[in-house]
Length: 88
Image 1 (cartoon, rainbow, N blue to C red):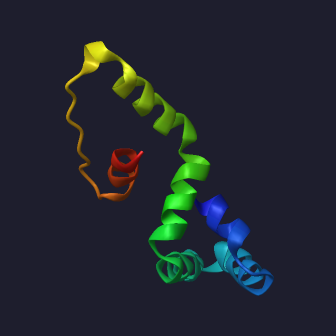
Image 2 (tube, rainbow, N blue to C red; image 1 turned 180 degrees about the horizontal axis):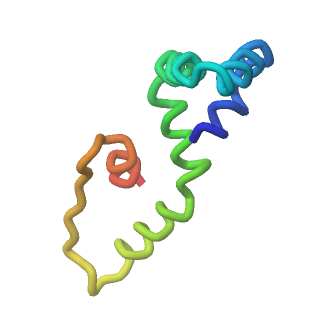
């Protein structure tokens, strides 16, 4: 997802983040996290769809086979990917 966030940053923030990557990773990370937090859930869903395609496809294939039903799924670390798969 770092690549996806970096692509969406403005030029000034890209330069700042690139500079910090070699000097202070914590400051570079903060630029990314601030952008993600400001953009909210729509950005997170967009990133999941852009970069999680193969994993989402694999889940959908499992869910589409009758012999796998009923199925229960849950997440252990958050809610975003599980919520997105539930919505799909």
